[in-house]
Length: 239
Image 1 (spheres, rainbow, N blue to C red):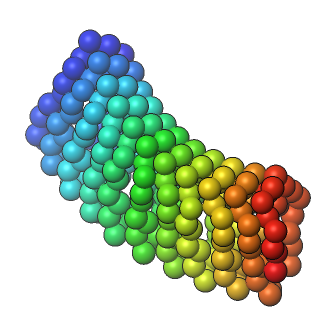
Image 2 (image 1 turned 90 degrees about the vertical axis):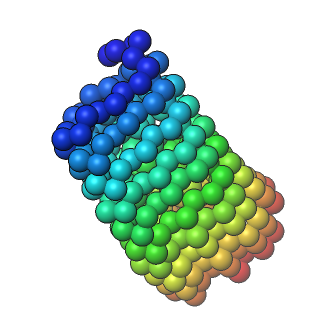
């Protein structure tokens, strides 16, 4: 790791930034990526703790897992059109990340993609997204509202767990299952409407939602699993 490197200007002509290319460059503050680059490899900028901003050119079509994980000073990022998938833990623990723009081209958000982004206040999930991975937004403690787009069929395990400021969640009619600990520890959530298509609520899905007062279970529910509502100390009405 180049711990004294403060800036990078990658020359035109490069098409690929390899895995771990600049990982642990702890003094790195700025990066210029040319519009010839099409892929950013796994953990390429992982734990560049002083990287404050990065402009990803429109030429990039693939951002691999953990590419910017642990970039704790990163405050904003614009993901370019053409990206179809945000990989596993791509922005994991970017704890000062406040603004993210996700293009309409994205169809899947990987596990832990934004987990631990404690300052992320809002996120617009494009309508084309059909898959949101386990823990994708876990521990986003400033996130207040989320609209899950039509087409998503499962609210994955721990996807919004410990989102302690979350007060509003819109779940579309396409969803049929709520995963393990999906909303565990969402202590500001007071009400939730489950669509009629939901048939299964997995273990601890709403555990420790201490402000949850009302929940209406859909008519087609077949399975409510272990500790689904454990620790919901304000829950007074289940219908």
